[in-house]
Length: 253
Image 1 (cartoon, rainbow, N blue to C red):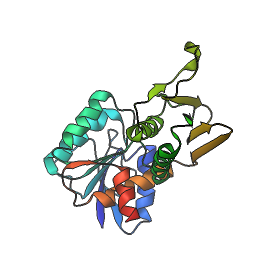
Image 2 (image 1 turned 30 degrees about the horizontal axis):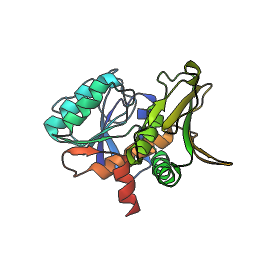
Image 3 (image 1 turned 135 degrees about the vertical axis):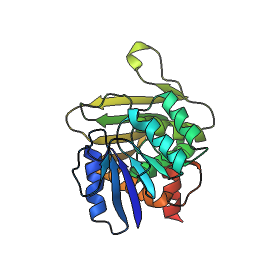
Image 4 (image 1 turned 90 degrees about the horizontal axis):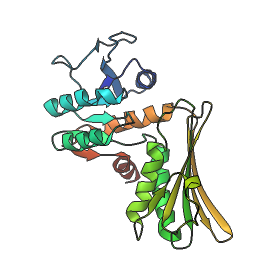
C-alpha cells in the first residue's frame, strides 16, 4: 500500500486522483495539503506542510507557487515528490534540479504514458528520417491555456533535438520572417480553442510523403493515472531526478 500526500487535493486534478485512489487497492490518499483547508474527502487537510504529515510519496498537482513548500518538505523528510504541475519558470526548474540532489524528485512536462511513448516514437522516427524530412510540431489546447507552445510540445522538440546529428533551431512564428525553411528547423505551432484537453502531432514531411504521429487526450484523468503510477514507482527511490522515461523504461522491462 502506497500512502499518498496530495498537494492541491481540493483542485480539479486533486479530486480526480482521490477518485482513482478510492478504486485502486494499492494506494490511498493519507492526507492533503491545500491552501483552502477545506475538507472534501475522508482524510485530513492542512493548509501547509507540518510535522504531522507522514506518507510514502507526495503528489503535487497544485500551482507553481506551491513548489518551494513541496520541495522543502521533500528534502527534509526524503519522501519522494511527484511534481505534476506545469508552467514553471527557468528559476523554478533550477530549484527542482537542486532539490533532486537531496531528495527523490519525479518531474515530467506531461504525466501521460501515451505522450511519453509518442516522444520515444518521435525520436526513433527522427533518427531514420531527419536527413530528408522536415519536422513540425502542432499542439492544440483549450482556450483557457495561457502558455504557448505547450510544455509538452517543447519536451517533444527537446527530445528530438537530443538525438539529432546537429543542433536544431526552434521556429515559433513564421509570418515575421520571409525566407525559405532551413533544414535544421523544428517548427512549433499552437492552436487554442474550446475545451480541447490536449492534442500533439509531430509531422515528418518528406519528398512526396508525410509521416504523422499524434496523441489526443480526451480526459484529464490520464494525467492523474500517470501521477499515481509515478507515486508507486518512486517508493524507495534515492535522491535524484526521475521522469516518465524512467517509468516507461521500467514498464517495458
